[in-house]
Image (cartoon, rainbow, N blue to C red; front, side, top):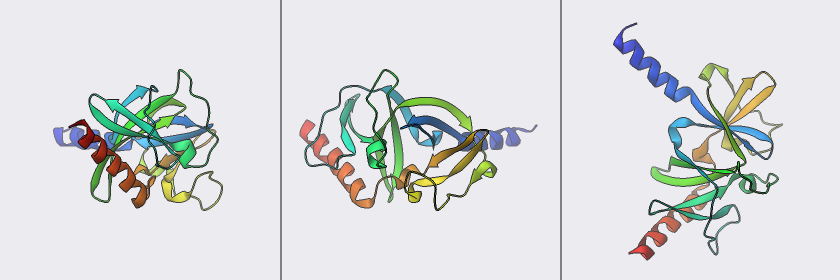
Length: 174
């Protein structure tokens, strides 16, 4: 195998890798390329006058990071936090703006490769979450894994709220 083929394969592999996690007994996945890190669920600072799905903010090495409760956002049953509850820190580009945010998940499962050929189009019925959040459905032996289009999870208005949280909290620290 040539060096060029190896580089191309690595690029494809990285693009195909997804982190799977449980959220209200649903298995979801997000592309690994969007993930900065995974941390234990810990103390969150609640913010007044924000939508109920914004659980609060955390201090991540001096940076203010808003934390989104996906179960609340998707109108799914929210579970009590336990030792497996995690916050996935993600960086996404929304409307040409880079946004760092955390998403609360019940538990992280694994990193898997999902080639584009194994991703089915989003069905119009049958999923518990709105289809504009879904990139597709990955086939697996016992069903499907929902692949989120994380850049579509927040609306433009919600992105503005998260962005304003970043700016106002950063300026408060000065």
